[in-house]
Image 1: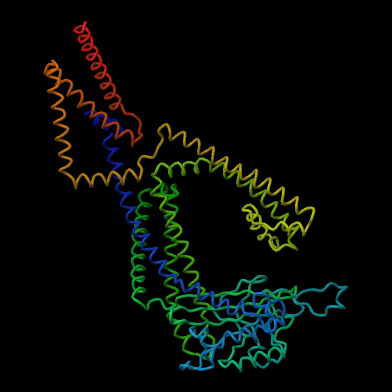
Image 2 (image 1 turned 90 degrees about the horizontal axis):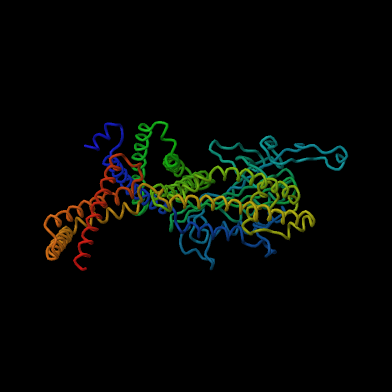
Length: 621
């Protein structure tokens, strides 16, 4: 009756609050179980995409083409060459030796290799390698008037505007005539420029002797000159033992400053996805992933329709949207990569006398792997949504939310000082220290200084006055002052949150309590007999106490009153110990009335006990 009256007055009854909380608990448990199944499926899917042999295949290819010593110079390799002369030594030495494995180590051919090379005897060379050069035009920069008598030519750095499209040299082959880029060509981001496709291209022959003759001819006719800005060496191989394609790109950049900068890319990818039974199991996981994606999108659309703009007030909903977007991108990349494999793979393998451009396929597969990696990262982060009901995690989230304004103010001050030091380091040491050669490198170098990784000798050698001053003041202000201020902000806020939780501000329910309660309910259902035995034992104990009270001279009315008070006391204690401990709602009028009546009855019971004690004392006297 009182609860009905309270409901009519516009409040929420205790029963309704408890029901709502129980519904929320059940929904959370169901979401958690469903999400764990999704996470397990995603982990199987992602780890099934990665083959441990990818690392070893990249490693052996890198050691063969990057670390092999140049002829007559054991200390130099492609990794360390810095001149055009050394580059030609590499082309005619380690490159040819690494590409053409036309016989065993004992000069025999134990089986028919069908006019193809087997790198390390296991990796078949697909098609023929391709060498491509990008050039810039003469007179793309201006020479100062006083030096025009000394410099008649001027070649600027590589840009799309400075790119040379005219024929040069012998002008009698594709290596001397410019070829336009293809429609699906990708740009290459190098050390000193961003390079487009196309250029002056030639392919090596399947014969090692013919390839060596071709390279010697290009060297004698100065195929690489002052206008050269980049040379790309591309080839691909396939290892049937581990079902992996290895796409290799070796890059030599010729900056306008002179010299030579080398870089390389080794991509081991699985273009033929479904070969073994395990591959088909992964395919089933991919189908399940798409089903989960459809279910999660449906759930979020229902929530968005129910809560409208209030849906975007929760950080977990934003994380959910980000995760769904990443999953959708992953599915899109997967479909695009498989479609490109189907369209291009057969065409590339059809003509074995030309260069098969697997770099395009490898590029998109690497992007797909990156999207999947980011997706599973945020999928694991979402676990915090479910364990945030735990008291410790709730304290962490409360601490971060409370100190967010202070952290934003601190971050502004931190990045002002950090950027000032980064620009100072770039301007003072940029021309001599590699870590400060660009403004971006200066920023990362300062982060490494904070972590204890720094080159103080290089800084001091670059400027023996400003170097130590820069280093000491940076360590003092950033490491000793600013970082300790950041820790103080977090520590003080955490102390406040800890104090609030000590006086009762806790989460409405904890995940551990949910799991424990469910576990106990299951045990209780499985052990009904034991629960009944406990109830019988409790009844038996009550009867024994009543008989003992009769022996001591208590009347039946007194015994019944004591049993009534005990039952009422247990009911109230159970009610408030279970409800108030887990639900910190404001006390209603009905609750206050029950507490008041309980206090009155306790007072009567204490008065009754006092009278009995007085009687006992008079009898003893």
